[in-house]
Image (cartoon, helix red, strand yellow):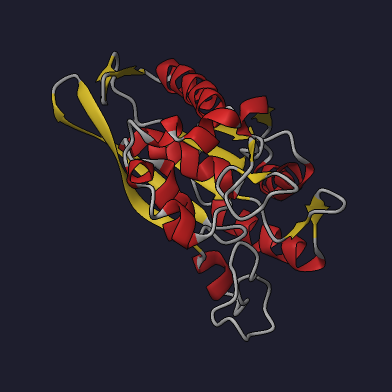
Length: 241
């Protein structure tokens, strides 16, 4: 089985759509995806993901199923340095989360008091439950830390979604705390991540990332990646903080 996870193209968050650059990225992405043999397409209900997917679906003459749980992962927390408002669960300052050893543990990160207060693990578990149900439809049933293969499959499913939720899905497949993924990896707008199942023992499968955050569809057209999802390289830079 193969899973393709695509982050939406350069976002216009105010209108929950795409910027002019984002539409260009989505068009270049559609050229690439038209060459893929995809069994089924799934998409987040949010506009920026729907718009990104629309060009691929139009070019391939296909349709997609909208899944509510593919929307951006958005539980809110009171992080240590922000007292008057809440932030997304994965938006922490590095010095704060890295001092909490439990954040590196797949079993312990959700037990952090701040995460518990925001109900983050509850939402994480909900997403993982729905993801497991989807994979089971293709013959891969989550069992412990691997997957039982009810029937072998060369199907490819393509998910158009968002950065935060992509890291949740990878965290679940790899049994890794999402915190190092949220803070250590950048999936730029319109980027493509490809995961394959591996059945090294009969009836037992695990998943392995073959490509992460690939942007070759932009580079082939000489298009620079969007800066969205990144922070300033140096503190004095004018880029966003």
